[in-house]
Length: 300
Image 1 (cartoon, rainbow, N blue to C red):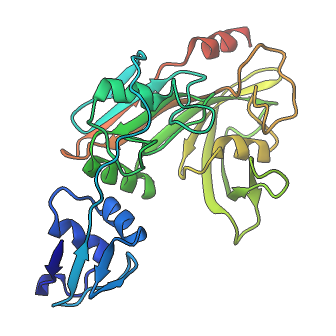
Image 2 (cartoon, rainbow, N blue to C red; image 1 turned 45 degrees about the vertical axis):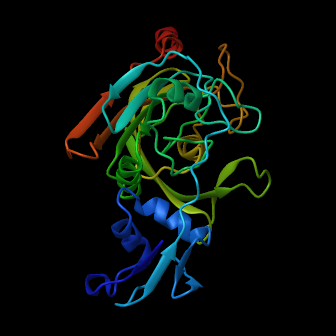
């Protein structure tokens, strides 16, 4: 496809203008085309930040859509909210969000493909259709998936701007003295174990901010609510360990053995609030605590 930029595109970024050439093509997908070297300006490959001038010749190819190499599976979903743009699901413990090495079946994506058919965004590639964010396998609760690329762009932008409200419930080891607090560090790959994340020195990793509030104190544990301002990998688990209160049941970031029969950390994505991509209406969803979590609170 070949296009000549007009005067209103003068001074605009190439990734912003490509969707103007091709209807229903999202900016995120345009960025992917540029990254893959499929976009030329005046015969040369450019970066997404390239600024156009009037009269530039823009050419790009859209590769044929690839079907995911994964199969839809009729796995029951606990749907908290659904419309034509997004779906919010209460993910159970032990379910992986998207296929990866060792987990190509039984994932949330397999279930979403069965439920939604072909209506899932494709920005994140063939193994992660619809997925705009994720939670760990043993973390339960709210996950939002997008049914088209425009919705994906909207939710991704809200996540980037920290306007999506995400509240988690967790049980931590030890008694937290302060009623509330803010943990602000940088998080990156651990230098001693590349499979783990860790608090790293300023200037490395990425900024991570977690707000926590004590809901109830027990003899040896604390029930807390955490609000994510950023969404780094394992952020809550790393941050609570950093302040000396790792999550109960976390076998990766804690060396404290649990006296209870648990599978992974006690962490639940309780509340999700966001703007509906098309209408702008504010949507709130609440995922009830899973039975194991409620039962543990009763024991404590």
